Image 1 (cartoon, rainbow, N blue to C red):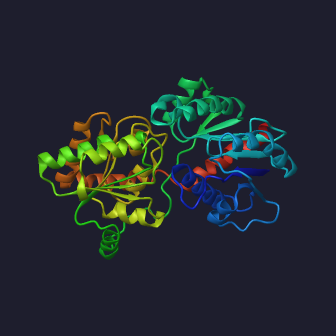
Image 2: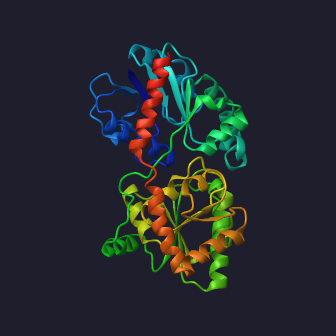
Image 3: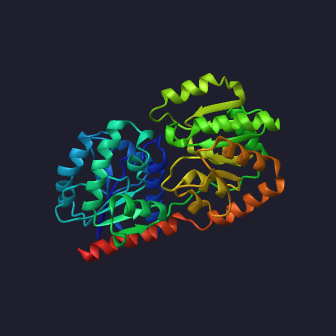
Length: 378
């Protein structure tokens, strides 16, 4: 069985889906070292992955994953011939896209969320309309769908009427490096690096409306106002879309150095920032999985997150759950974590236990089982 995988989201600067693909590839190489893979991508993708592939086992794509619609047209109608010539038996699109045409190979797709259907107002209108059409085609053509949570599986069943027998839930996990770091000299180093002057709350994610940053900042200011807690809010992430209104609102609040936007930071710095933080705050409006919350728990950092979408499924009882649409609820969640040391200690311990329920080794084995199943069915 030869497995083809689209790696075009694994770029040097990447967000959630790119990290999912990279971690899955590492897991697959660990659990199935003899498995034959055919990777699709560009030069920067292969360099980031770091695999020393034999000649003929990597196909250079002329277009990136973000090239809509030309990259999609290439994938749908030209890529299938390449996969057929390479003898690929199963092709996995780990970032929502697969060829709509097939010439003898089975197709597996990972669906991370249905934001284009359920929160279309948080993404550009034309893109939302296009992705709604495309995802409908993808779920019909795929031989098997991997969902990253039970919640996303239910969304697929409710919104797109997908047969549940066609869906396999395979959870993500925190990658290596996200673990408790007790060395205070490293905490001090990361504080100096990002000019952090005292205790801070931490958030990471692309800067876009779905991450609910305006309510987060309003809740932070409300909490500081009424509790007199001297704490900063640190927000890490690269700019996504629809950010103009967001930054206009933030500028209007005149935050000064109470709220710090670091921009994108190296992945190696994230565990240090999470360890140095008093708590991780993630009041997202919608997540297919919510990996940053799990990464924070893996560091032993208390988590405050939303009580909707997949997040309760991921964090279990090991986090403070808040209503992301209510500023007061978010403010209260942050305040109780900062002021209740017993709660903070309990969340840190229970978060570590909850995080250990997820692993990339398990995710890789379950994904490999999906490949084998569709290969045998074909």
